[in-house]
Amino acid sequence: MSKSEKFFLFVVVLLFSTVVLSSCVREDEFAHGDYVRLKFSSDTITFDTVFTTVGSVTKKLMVYNTEDEPVKIDRICLVNGANSYYRLNVDGSTDLVVKDVEIAAKDSMFIFVRTEINPNNASNPLLIYDSIAFLFNDKAQYVRLEAYGQDAYFHKPDHFLLSFNTQTNRYDTIRYSLAHQNCEDRGIEVEGNQIYWKTDKPHVILGVCAVDSAYTLNLGSNARLHFDKNSEFWVYNAATLKAEADREAPVVFQGMRLDDYYYNVPSQWNCIRFMAGSKDNVLDNVVIKNNIIGLIVDTCVNSSPTLTISNTRIENCSNIGLYARGAKVEGKNVIVQNCGSHAVALTMGGSYEFIHCTFANYWSYSTRTDACLLLNDYYVDVYDAVQYREIERANFHNCIVYGSLSEDEMELDLLNGNVANIYFGNCLLKYAKWQDYSSIFTNCIFNKSPLFVDVANGNVCLQSSSPAIGRGDGVWSYTVPYDINGVYRNDPPCIGALEYVPSTDRKAFGILKKR
Image (tube, rainbow, N blue to C red; front, side, top):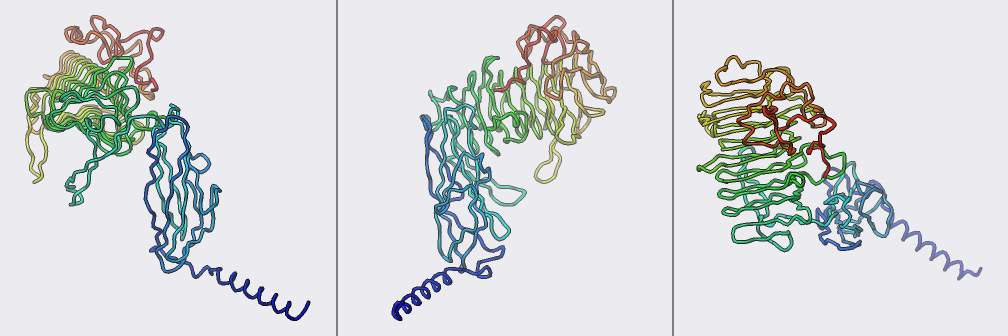
């Protein structure tokens, strides 16, 4: 090799070494500390196209390093790993876990996210969630991914209001949609002030959905409403909800998780709320399940009933099942069961009548101390002053109130001990203090188990030896001739929402049917 060739080779090696050494960053030169944060072009990537066939869509995420030093990301991956509906391309790598990704100071990088979903596949979740995890400096940051998994009507918030939070002493932003708007996209038909939601596909509620004042929302047979976590359904002042269905195709309010594990899991969404002044609300053949509070029924401000509820099941609420506050409620063939607090709380006075209802509380997710049924005739105002609100009437005919507490499953929380307008006739009750108020009970059975078939699985049908069989008052069964499962009542009837039938003839208890 000539001297010139040797010199040229030396220069090439020197230049290569210089480039390599200059591109290497020592570990102590990376940005460290809790203050270091990545910035993203969006905190949520939403795939909002509903495909009619299997479709593949790719979206772009920008990741920014705003620090004066480079950042090394130890791992970038999908939280759900290989089971995810999503796939990533991180700076050219399609590995499930991409390691040791460096972003220079004041620089950025691309991540491409792809999903392939057939929304006509009914076994998919309604919404498919995942997150991209960025793990570095002993902490993690996440970008949420969401896509429509099934073909459904999606009610996404497009309005907002400010609500003052007395606990935090600041205003919270509540995002909501209205039940009569964006008709074409949301499966809505409007005729004057009457709203009709189509039932050919499920309706998915994100955030809050509200029935606006002076409107009536009509939900018919097989209407399915699925709620995201923290979502609610509101019926405003002077508005009305009429959910009326056939027994075999009820209206169902539940969470979005349809897999078996979540079938009876509470706290999947918040509540249905009938605001003060809502009127003439009707629930007939309805299932409400797996939320925090089943129904909140606020003060009645006119002579119209706030709520008429029949052939309806409310179950697996982590707080209260039916929570009335100075309302006017009339219930027939209602089952409320398995709630973390009261199954039924009738508070701040009001007017109530329940016929052939079963209130059964065998909550098993945590320790429960609140009675199954609460009656209350006062409230504490914002000045911590106690305000009396009269119970105009609270009548219970042929009803069961029972549960797993060792003693009382009823609580009469009355400011002046006034029980003049409270009455229980032909009821089966778990209440040791009944003799203190003996005048309000007629032909009642106390502290004898109703012998439900399978409380662990929510089956409150009666066993053949139940003391509730044939102990109801036939006068009241004439107003409710069929039980919640459509069985014609005997004379005298059974106490509760379900007439006894032999196990060989018993139809599947509706609340256990998976939908």
